[in-house]
Image (cartoon, rainbow, N blue to C red):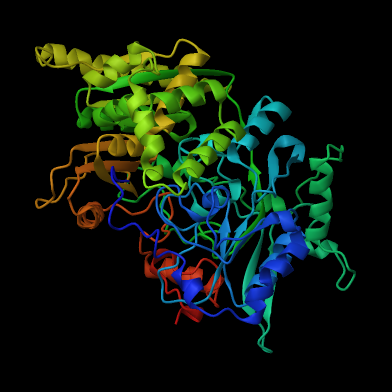
Length: 623
């Protein structure tokens, strides 16, 4: 983000690939063909940017391009038919959910050597979801929003919770995108979005040179397995799931489905995560280049995910939340190791870290967003407001891209503080702060955690007093959230961090870089900037502290070479044993390791699905 319209703006150049390349007859007719599949109202011209198409063409933080067209299938069968038509026309496919990705991988790219037109397949209309196995699991079509899913599970089964929460949950990103990126580590007891039970498409070519769509079915649901259908019967799992999903959307009551015996043996979440995260080793808890699991996991658009099955989780019978402030990083890390990660059975619900710069910037530029989440909640309303902001930014005026953030930054200080002063005062006073949520799950988890926390704080503070460190120094302090309203406010405050940073740098006429990375589980320091680094105006550091996955937003004065600083910082993290990226996906910003690239190339040998991600070639068959 920049506080001025930078010289790197591609507004004039974008789209040159499609405009300069003569379209084939099949490509010229593609839009009409797609309209016959999904209806005219669900196909949009991606070459003529407007306030209605900008949300499909511009990334939330990075990436912008034009597409031959944008198609929104309404059934699984339509999605497969659209995919076939697009690849048969010699186009490339950009799968898209809510387009909240931060590294450019969910929007078209035009400034490449590839001359094939891009087509965006937006999966948001595929939003049916329903429980199976008496609520212990849930089936989600690809367009289901994570916030929508969480609300549904809570309504259907008050004693259960959905599988994952992301930092961008208030924008209702899709469950399929969470799986494709392996994101969502806020909830320590559940781990990131991951499932080996899915329905997804892979594109290849047969010996006659025909493009073929292979539908991979590992859903593991009775009546929906491939073996449940006779060959050439005219029926298949996709059709049957479409019928079931359509009945659900229309409110018809259906008998709850069950997992098959084989399906019960397949992971529908990261079941080993609690054990892994507590192991104090040099390994990283999670990262986007992980090559394990079914191909849908961390696929980043190299397959088209149609549906997924996810575990649900026991909801706590009681919940407490604390703002804990520490005098130094060493003590903060000891709290993480000795209290939060003491053993897998007693993990807290979440443990989120904020340094003082994070607290200052969120308070300075994120009050309005915090209040919106507090009182409007997450999901459709916030998604609508986000789309309005995006549409304003796409207006054909030079001031449009910066207007909303400039306005929010200016108005911010006229708005009351968004979280109670008992929390904010500690955040302003201390450099290191943790928001820790703890629950009772029927086995004494809450009491044991409180015993550990009380003992840790007493041990440190007693030692500080005995050594007279506290003279002019600071003790560990903690403040409890007294009500559900306090808990909601704290969660909202944490989740608007990335939005607040963008508003801050634009409002203050600065520029910035954003990096997410995983550090070794036994790493307990702040990665140093390289000696030659330009001193930043602000270094905003916030993290999923339990798994040591860090988000850094670093603000610089205008004129600084931010690309150089970005590359230097990435190298510094890798020298410390860290892995980048951790959960935002490689997109067009990060180069993936060779084994990850090989995995993607095996998924998509023709390179028609999301070409160019993770440093891969944009050319057909990877050149």
